[in-house]
Image 1 (tube, helix red, strand yellow):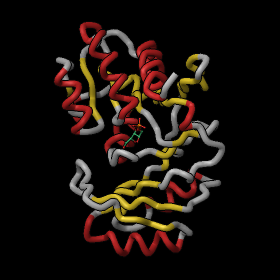
Image 2 (cartoon, rainbow, N blue to C red; image 1 turned 180 degrees about the vertical axis):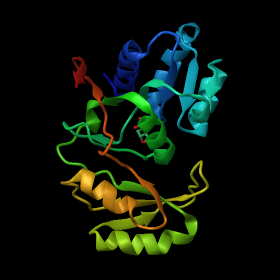
Image 3 (cartoon, protein in one colour; image 1 turned 120 degrees about the horizontal axis):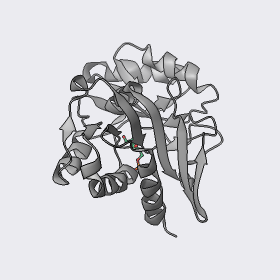
Amino acid sequence: MDQNAKKQAVAKAAIDYVESDSIVGVGTGSTVNFFIEELGKIKHKIEGAVSSSEASTERLKALGIEVFELNEVSNLSVYIDGADEVTEHKHMIKGGGAALTREKIVAGAATTFVCIVDESKRVPVLGSFPLPVEVIPMARSFVARELVKLGGDPEYRQGVVTDNGNVILDVHNLEILNPRELEQKINNIPGVVTNGIFALRGADIVLSATESGVETFK
Ligand SMILES: O=C[C@H](O)[C@H](O)[C@H](O)COP(=O)(O)O
């Protein structure tokens, strides 16, 4: 089974967590793109979606799924999104597609976060995947120096502007042994919008596609 087949399998499995007549929180990325396809097949059963990126919004709308602003919605039962890395504690690194800030906001507004990955994303410790940090453009060099003080090796993601008009620093060589602490520390640097550690609000359920089927971690 290739990686795309695994992404498709886990996307199908995530449909079980979508409640009838609800508004679904939708993440961003190649795994979620398969989920959006699956959601299109049951669109008559849901009220619509809240999206975490312009890219996902476009895909949802193209399938005829109504997209609501988060400000219009008081109750989001589930948020479904991929990850770049996920641990057994359901802590994640996200933001490989630069959508981390809106993802963290929509995830924070949802009762249940279901993380959908293929098994290649599962790691014992976060940090092999360079940690994305969204930064206000004028603060880029200052934030980079502060990240070096924390032991990282930040690299400016050339040519990328986030949906919020900001830039991304990818921080290499971090071994993230205490993700909750580091998430807070990086978020406290002036000029940082958010960072891609999702540990203070991790996933509630991880669905992981393997050769032999989709495993569920709660
Ligand atoms: O900014 C992008 C998101 O955090 C994605 O959820 C993450 O990068 C995983 O994407 P993919 O499913 O394409 O590996």
